[in-house]
Image (tube, rainbow, N blue to C red; front, side):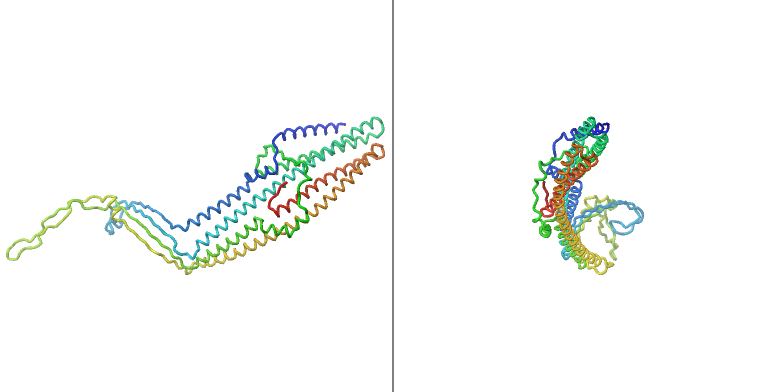
Length: 477
């Protein structure tokens, strides 16, 4: 009697808690998938990888444009240094400044840059397919978690029916014990069974909570935010493709053309081949050009000021004693040459062409070329491994679907047989022709058969949806 009351109190508290937490809007599978695609951390991370590849491609394309750079140097010289004006050594302190503008670029690099751009383009397309794969995988994982919630919810319902049935049998047995029709041990056995059934119900309800937490993790939804899945009216009426139309070779032949990872692998091979061509081009001479503008300034450069003339004697007229003179120019003063004038006088220009011929660089370029070629082979092997795994997964999913269908068919028959056995046992028990232990055993067999049927049904649905996912790259309920 005490165990029955405790179990009843536990159930009341649990149902009250469930009622409080589900008073909210429901989440359909489509809503869950849409929300997950917008907020899932793995998808966001893959999106960043795609954007990084996009920036790399943009940078490699802009690399075709010649480089333009400006420079500015300034310094203070003290002691014995070359004079900026005469280029002779002087002992003087002075300030200097230099500035320039340079332009340089490649004229011909055996298409190395074009191959690099092609490789980056393939990388971007590959990352786009990897993003699509991440989204498809997320949608499948969300659908799987959603199905798990539905399964656990159905198991809660089965456990609730079991608890109600055991409690009803207990109440009837109490009356029979009072009437003296059955021994009191029958009541004790049913009270123990009620406690066990109540524990199973608590476990089933906790499984619902855990599966909802798993779904929230995929959605990147706060664990404190309520989420109530929208349960379909009849899960058994879901549209499933006939198993005969899901032959593994047929599914694989479709998947090999639609599976994003397969497309990504092929693009990665093309990227590796382009990288190999770009690396191999570095073995050949490279022609480039350069041009520049520049000027300089120093604060110790002097500029002449006012011009004057003086009479200098350069000789004497013979026999006449008359001096011969000339006018010699000279500057009365000097002043510091202004900045603008120095920049104008020191302005210089340059242009040139460079031919670079690689002769010996520690075998680095040839080693890199060999590595790039091996990387192509490695990408091809990765593609073959992924294709092999895809085929293995499809064949495994098909075998599991066949087994799940057989298991579901057997479990349905098992429930029918267990129900008949339980109905006969109930009649015999009520007539006092069966003891409590045997009756509880029969009841437990029915309960287990019902649980197995629900599990088998959802397992079959999941296995078929997995095959549909491989074939169509989408999933729906």
